Image (tube, rainbow, N blue to C red; front, side, top):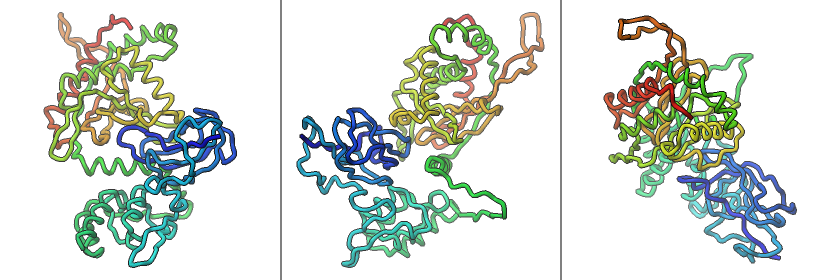
Length: 436
């Protein structure tokens, strides 16, 4: 008999910790290799963690609600053969302890302050603190009472990672909490005023779920970080509509997938990005990072009403049939909550099909750290003037609006407007005789 540690696996780039949502097994349960043992959540996706070994779940080291760093042990598994990392002692090394080994879900022990051990009881706080902020507070020995004095620049005055790190830095330099608070209030007073909602009899109060809180915070952050400008064009997509109507049944019989407009739009966006590579960039302080890969995020509405953005990596390397299959697969698994964390990271440009809700246009918010996002409006039949060899005629055409929001720090109107115009050009010039 041997013992192995089940560790928190790597969840994708730039993800260093995850919150344990639910244990699917309890101590004493038999588990198979690759069988799901628990559900975790990152700031990008909820996912299941499979067991790396078969055996008996001997001990759970991190409780539900704990925030655990990638690589830290979360459980002990007893196996028939110790073919993994043996663990003679089930107590993890001090440097690998999770927040669950230090405290319960809503209560964490903060180390000595003035010789006395303080316990940070977040239940007593009326403010919301993210798991990351709580971890930093614990590591920096900041009691809840002191944490309450920090003025937040996030949504509704929420303390962000930057707020608490700035506070810690000022604290180390000898500034008093009152000094730091005054400075924070002065710098953020106009940025994030909290307006009290009015509640009347009969009103329903709905608590935001975790995903909605993250969406709200990210959207506010994006508008604060990037000065948004939006350019609009109207495209004649009659060729695309007619071509799709002609080939969609054949495609479904041959490949077993439906052919939507989304892969056609993605293809046009990819071609435009190749023509204007400076739209495929990110901002890092005073530096502009031009991305080599073209990774297209596509916004998907979930049954809950929330939004998620799976990413098609290296979208320029797929043909139209490949894009169609990938789009359908990602959209289906997004709605079934079966996406992998890596499939939600690394995007360099995003599209949002607001036309699927019957909207003719929209002004989308940029997905940070990207600098551009295109909203695709509903396709409508309209009378249009067409130039023919024998003169102008009025004809019924299929038209749609495209709106491109871009980060005006690095994307000027000429580039932002040219990109969306080029996307429209590729859609309008689509070859109606093309095969798939």
